[in-house]
Image (tube, rainbow, N blue to C red; front, top):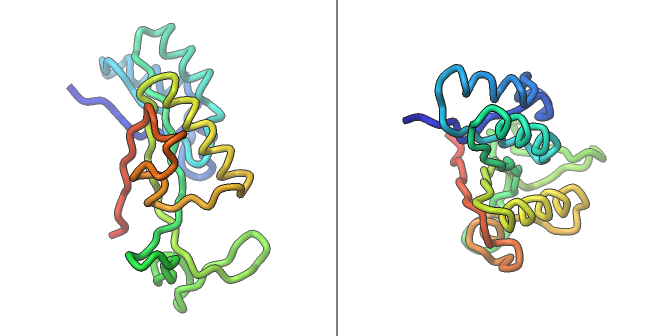
Length: 158
């Protein structure tokens, strides 16, 4: 039995085009018992996705893909490589300033209501800039208050 664990809705700018209802309709058509919604850096479609899935008899799995900065073993922020920015390994933030860090997508899925709450908190903190998310903090549970009820999957760059 196959279940999609990473689907993007039209709320993921340039990554997804379907509204949550169409994702659920496709899952029903393919006779999937469950499907996950993992929009990038936001959980805007979580409620309509959940409602549509429950109505259609499909188990909804809520999640998010957070773009997190990678660290090297020494604890320094990783100097960006060519895959993350321009030919000099630089990329720019929203203010046009050069950043010396590389981000990678981290898929987080909620296992229960506590996990959903923790994903909402992590997403909010990322948007506010109040928490500098790093792979060690999110993956290895160094944020113990936000670790319960979630599963993480880091994707390594090619």
